[in-house]
Image (cartoon, rainbow, N blue to C red; front, side):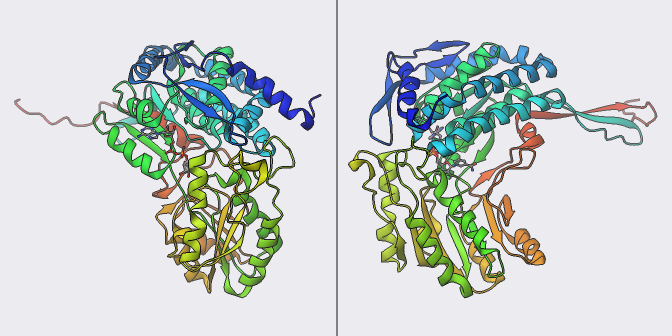
Amino acid sequence: MPTPDDNPSRAAAALSRFSGSPVGHFIAGRSDAGSGETFDTHCPADGRLLARVARGTAADVDRAAVAAREAFESWAATGGAQRRAILHAIADGIVARADEIALIEVMDTGQPIRYMAKAALRAAENFRFFADRAPSANDGLSLPSADHVNYTTRQPIGPVGVITPWNTPFMLSTWKIAPALAAGCTVVHKPAEWSPLTASLLAEICSDAGLPAGVLNTVHGLGEEAGVALTEHPDIKAIAFVGESVTGSRIMKQGADTLKRVHFELGGKNPVIVFDDADLDRALDAVLFMIYSLNGERCTSSSRVLIQASIYDDFTTRLAERVARIRVGDPLDPATELGPLIHARHLDKVLSYPAKARAEGATVAAGGNRSDFGGGMGHFVEPTLYTGATSDMTIAQEEIFGPVLTAIAFEDEAEAVRIANGVRYGLAGYLWTRDTGRAHRVSRALDAGMVWVNSENVRHLPTPFGGMKASGIGRDGGDYSFDFYMETKNIAIALDSHTIPRIGA
Ligand code: NAD
């Protein structure tokens, strides 16, 4: 039975498979070295080289897109029961290798093991959930009129591109790939270049589970090379993208010539509003969890806490005490609550904000520095809390995507809503109150695709997931995913009772 003390040696064993030749693409059911050009991926905790990875070119993307096109007809025609069986087999494969996936994910992303172990299992749940919906994916509606029987049916749109970010790569990619496969689409996946390794595991697990060659293809590489080629490829009918808002806007331009359908899950600057009548102990736990777990590298993190003025000082004092006690450390250690940030460039970005915060008049109430954990080898930061902030400050407007919380005071409901909505993003909103009427009013007033009341981000897979404004286009989850990966067709059959206009008679 493995114990946490074994984590470093088990992680080393899991990574040893990447130490030989470069990690290849996976195209048409085979590992594919591509052009021979590579890029490196390093461990954020100590900078060690984990692997060299194939650096995809337009030619590699083309081979993958052709493989996806050639596999499409047969996969789309595969019965729903068969697709369901294969997707469940993939989930079984993920569960069987959950430990290995989690350890590799920790080493490649710097996310603490306490969260990644669950993320691997959530990935399996994503496959099971959409597996069970595969048999009904084509179903539609009956919409009869007086003279026609109308009914709708759905068919998979074709080969699709899936482009994912580096923060929780394995879980996030399954959230896109599982519904695409359940719908009958074939996929070309371009994982993020800062944490590419578990994408190769997913391709392998899918193949071992009996997914036919060409149905899931993985092309590693840089956004501006492989990513661009994928979004411009004429055989790719749609792009499901998770990442930054600015990248989403580039992808929209890149996909314009081939009229790509796009689904975007983008950035956020999500508010958590704490009213003075709330259960403040539960609110405190949720506020802390939603920004300082997953290294704060989470699209739905509550990066702004809006606190009613009557409780502002008490609540921020309690927050600061807890923030100072968050355990920064080795991400393989189960006791660690905050690991290293993904990359030196991201560390520099996060550390650029304390000076801006001070210059604009906020207080750094906790953290604000590079953490000395790891002796300067890793990208560790102190968990940071800004207080005395106002909504116009940079720290209240920009997505920092790190363990950094900005606390803003408000007087009443109207001001809370104004501040909450006063950013370009609109992904998630959280609010804490015991007043039921207010819970409904504020939920309705928030510009957010998802609102949680008296809760942290607890996902339920049938519900819609996605954002408004600069946070995204479209929704995932349940049947919403099929709306994206499928075309809806209406079929009208006459009852032979209506009058057909006669011309030239
Ligand atoms: P990013 O936009 O830099 O990169 C995401 C992916 O896009 C990577 O695979 C990258 O290689 C690729 N890419 C970059 N430029 C491209 C281009 N021109 N054409 C095609 N592909 C391109 O994002 P990131 O830094 O990896 O991830 C962090 C961001 O992701 C944050 O903004 C975060 O909020 C967002 N995110 C959103 C959600 C959500 O559900 N809304 C979930 C997780 C992360």
